[in-house]
Length: 66
Image (cartoon, rainbow, N blue to C red; front, top):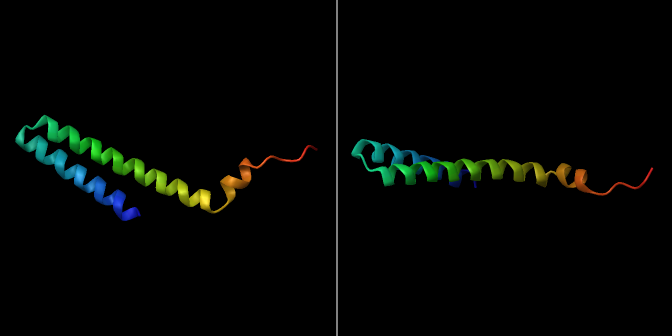
């Protein structure tokens, strides 16, 4: 799904640029928001890869008393 985050970031950047060029503050803000959503999705996807490896899940398992 990395493509989805990349597309979202690109779409947001384009909207932001067009908004700046035309003086449309709303479009500019929407573009910034979409770009941030793409970055957040990308970060979430990176985190999923680590969790699937089992390391994060193993770290959260209760340990037997020593």
